[in-house]
Image 1: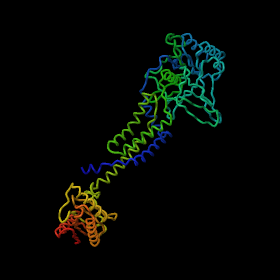
Image 2: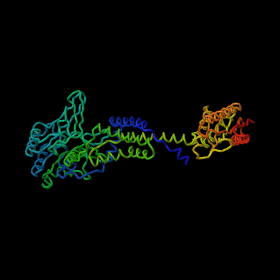
Image 3: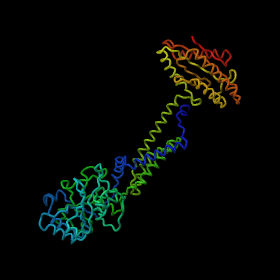
Image 4: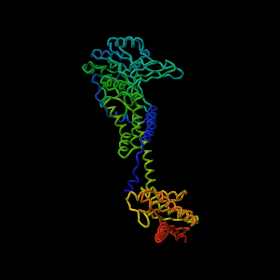
Length: 545
């Protein structure tokens, strides 16, 4: 019971808990705002979405320029007249909208090829073409590369082909709108979906020194369709009419490179293998938009504020009592992960939990370390008097006996018995007697004032002192002063129990040698105490050899 009481941590007062919660919350907000733990957030996001798939929108179909097409049609790039023939196939089959994800910003070297493709685009009337983003480098400004004029004139829409890839190489999101100077181009997937209403993502307000820089806006996280993804047909099969027109009718068709030799691969969250092509990425964008499955990113103010609130609540809890501590740990370590998952799955909203989780973990660890240190400090203390307990007394005496033997300096052990009046022992558990013992213990502790002096409670009504480097004269002075202090305490007391308190003191003083064990010092002080009690109590006996 005493050990349990010693290990019990008292809750901090509310004012101190609030003073600790405030800087902890601010630290979490700063970590969230600065994205100091962005890599951890992305790992959590990848884990949450890796197997969170949905069936792709049934209107989407990829016509892939794959290895089989390259082998049968020839080396890349092909004359644009080939694409014109494919586009006519799609037009005849009644395709709804076609994205030609092809490089069209330079004229074709084959005569008449551009005219053929431009005419095919005009006949279809629902073709989306890419705008390529060329980043600034070597002193050159960033630029937009549109398809050549005759293509652009007949296109139903243009869209930017930029794919946002994070620093770790994972394609987690996209700017739904982007462009030079302002975000005026929709993404290719947005243009293909052709929704009547522009759905905003997370605004990205970037300040630029010049208008000739690429600006992204409406950022969303991409939820990939799966597990089979968007259906795919081989380019050559469609071109040669080996695909039933019914499979193409009413479909939104994406035409683009898929063979790894000509198409850079993108890595979705949590995915291994060869990844997907840029055209496939745009297909997932369109599917997400068509089924209203876009993953919004929480605005920065809310992101930081929730992180701060979670950590502040955690600190308020862990600095409280036992139940509050359990709640605080749950708030700090479980709530951020569950909140992020719940918002993602139920609200298609991403809140990055790493800042709150890591700062909360640091706070919990700090409080636990502080509590453990306190337990270790209190483990050697008597819970009633605050003096050392018998275990600490024995340990300290062993250390000081060895130190005294090495230094050849005297060591004094003092045993003190507290009585009510002349010879009546204190009653354990009696409130008035315990108050008397506590008052005397304070006086004993006051006389063990040097850094190496130690005071302890070694019995129900027995106290002790260890006085290193103390000769008999010093021991006599301590005993006399202590008895005088207790007599003054008794004379000034209004409580009947305290007014009758007396002491019996036995002291044993020797220079330690190998023949004098710890038990010899305790036994010697005990024998002196016995003689002091036999002499009438309220006195002391010193055994100085």
